[in-house]
Image (cartoon, rainbow, N blue to C red; front, side):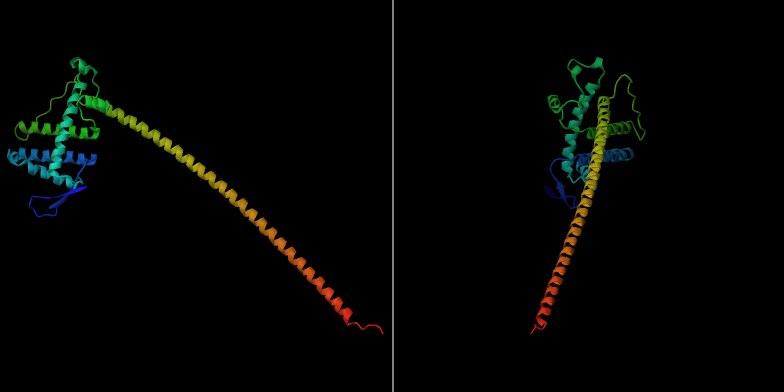
Length: 277
């Protein structure tokens, strides 16, 4: 069901009245929102780097209005309030998952007693996620997009805070300390490999089924052709037999008529001959 909301911007343009979509967000809508926030953050950082802190004074409503307009251009028909609420929920779930992944990806010597038995978020089931106070349905593609958006925002904020437009290099990670998302990346790679194997097996199975269906269809076609030929031959024999019967019947009728005519002629001849005196 759609909810019609009047835009209060007073611009008088074509989007003065918008039909906002209600209900659960689709994956595509969520990805559009993440991209909109990433683009908005880049836009704000560029202005802050070139014009000082003037962008900080812009009301949040105007920034979320920009996000709404961006979402509408790409088919996400949500209001700025819906976008704001959804983003808050996304960031809350994302922070929980990322912090949990940091603990599971920590070196063995740095883990505590409980953390020894922790497994990656991406391999535990929904019940175990709930037990750890984690979101039950965070999707890998949404998590990856949020990681990219948050990391890029952090890098840009560091560069702007360091003075001017000079970018501050990010210190390289120690080779002994794994990335916070290494376990997730490994699990994602395993899932992709498993998915590729399953897809290959499904394709092979489908190919075998198609070949079997084609073979069965060809055999059925050949059988129908043979039956059609036999039926035609039987019909021809029946027609020939019927024609022969008709021919014999006509010949018999002609012979009977001839005999009858001869008998009539003979009888007439006897009647016309003079009787002896």
